[in-house]
Image 1 (cartoon, rainbow, N blue to C red):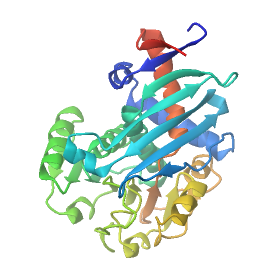
Image 2 (cartoon, rainbow, N blue to C red; image 1 turned 30 degrees about the vertical axis):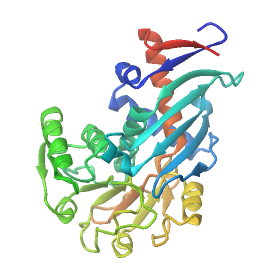
Image 3 (cartoon, helix red, strand yellow; image 1 turned 120 degrees about the vertical axis):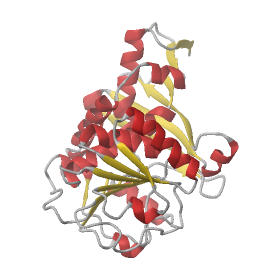
Length: 324
């Protein structure tokens, strides 16, 4: 692009680039590999909280190997769904690493959804049983769908059990996923039916400082893996303490959240995912241990995916050039 211009990519532009879930999973795994070797820069994300259980976060990061640096300004408002608005909204800015000049601004709703599902899939690759065939989804919004999409890319999923406090949400996910993913999707009436007996469980409800603790001890089966997309909101402390390995994507950020009131009753962290991907710490060791990945959603995720979007948009001539 000429000097003094940046590329603006709307939500429809981002989707139109056609970047696939498989490509995003590969980018996220490479990001964790870079993180595990210490080749990155990312401070814990600062944020403000204008409404109860709502947040607006600034998420800067730099990945030298991907020549990617920028920031995501993202909000999460649980009550938006009642207003007909997305829970997650925001923008992502990419900068030129050599000059610091902004080179692109893009909507981050699709990126946030897909990279979060991809992070679950990468965590599951190292922490779930490789023959996992059943998935339980609790929370059937955007994140529930993206996590199921990603897991179907990585595992021979045959059946998904889906639960949401709003039946229309779980029914909607079941209809779309059954047609597009070619798996059996069963709408269940109770949370326990989406946990007990499942090889992989994803909780994807709103993030709450005070967990509603629906999932009780004994629900997660031996050998099960769970991805906590909504922090510990769905989990009773006794259920979390049954797991043999509790992992996260970034310990400093995890501790930051604990300092401001989240994660008050969780097990000690076994490892960061980057440590597991690089072999510095062990992942799953046997078929019966229970494992958890609590992915906080880190800025490195976004900086791993945004260059894919920008490169494809340039190749396809997508987007609007704006003067600086």
